[in-house]
Image (cartoon, rainbow, N blue to C red):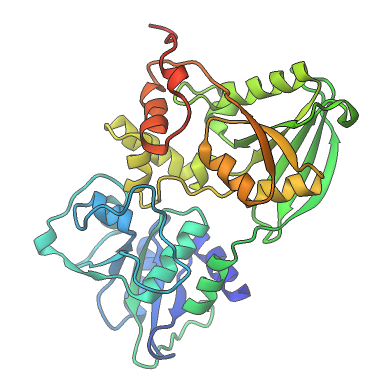
Length: 380
């Protein structure tokens, strides 16, 4: 699995990697992430490859391009099995530039299907898409098939097998370790303590914010799972209700004598800040939040809540009142052995910028927000 982690790291740095696998051990491709693609990297691929450069996209992106039927609603592909998932590989003809590749892979452009050399993505390309998604890169890769012996003369290029990628993706159990803690008085609650946790792979850090004195906490313990939202939490973006939910939960904890907010590093429902901003651009063009994410190649919600279960276990909290409007959070915690004894809604304020966002949450993801939609709108 270390080779797969290095491959992920290299993709994030804009470096190509060699992926082997398939029917024989000699089958190999050289691939690179489209995000950050340069002329030099494209030339590097062409110099090593024995066939033209190809572009691999996820089934969600392929549908947005008008190439395939829509995948089932809410489906996030299982990339752990190594079987064809509906991902598509497209032949790139002529002297394709990084800008041309980017325009084809990152927006609403619908190419002429008849002019494309289209086929099912190879298992090695699916592996590259998996690594890109795990690294919160745009899930699109360019690739070339290597020679019959699968060799690559550049020894600096790392090699990873499709089996290693599958193992990394299938490592479903997220382990977190305690890092440190310290007092952080807050405007909403002066008695507050931040506890930092780090995932075992060293990539993501999450924070548990303990409000009040533990001995005074109500039973069940009020808990909020809050996915990080830089734009809403820090800058007060009107596109979402995240910042209002964050500060509202802290006020609830303070009023009730305490509680715990788990601040999870899941920006943009797990797609990362860069892709979230790309999704915002697509929303400006008329897409709702779900379709925007799927157009970029992601599922409707890439989040998992294993880290939250682990953090609650470390804090020895197993019976909670959950502050949420999201049924998936309730299901995930219950599946992880947490007794969700009660649920309390947590609403923000409607405005003309977040109305479609809230409607999509209700209509597309089943969030319990109908009362918020029936409430007054700010700034009419």
